[in-house]
Length: 247
Ligand code: PGA
Image 1 (spheres, rainbow, N blue to C red):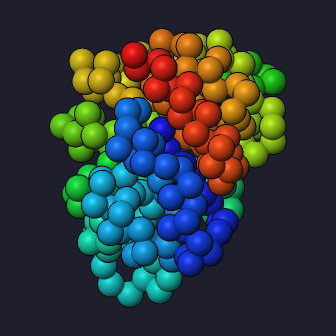
Image 2: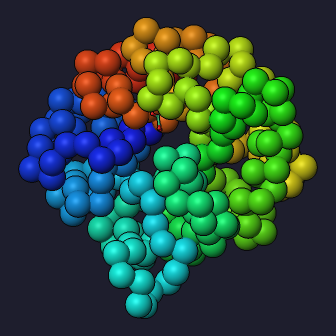
């Protein structure tokens, strides 16, 4: 389970929000990853970082150097991160060049011991035209670098249909399951047997009242949660749905 706080909360309030999640979530099963804004990472390094469940929301495709405003994978690892979200549609939409950088960003993350939480997903016109499988196949082929073949067990994929993010219009569990099966089959073609072990998360308007439906699907291994991760009671309920799946 991953929490994407996006550009919400202040650094001073981060610890309190995590405390409201409760110990059960921090040491529990399913595994939890919290991805706060960059400015919160240092403050959360001692708690979430030490527990191996701290993640960032992006990283640079470069190792280091004259890249004003960028944050490298090595910096994130030094602050205690173990994960980094890459290819989120909000980054892709804001920056038309973002998609071209994904393979190098994934390679940087892997080289510095970070597990990429790689996001893919189609927008509404593509879904309405029935071309979503072709689109996702192309996105996977374009974005996943050759290094992954050796490290595929370290990849987490998040299927996030763009039309479902922050809109309250989530994909149906069956729709998401169908896409997850498709993604797994593409990964198998690209990387071989490791694809069985790759965790594939669903993201897009996951809420306390729809999480159980997603958890009931065999190929939905977890969820990437935005808005509801800022509401501890809702997030605990979502966590509970996936904890029950693991039993
Ligand atoms: P949402 O965001 O849960 O608020 O729809 C999910 C995401 O963008 O990762």
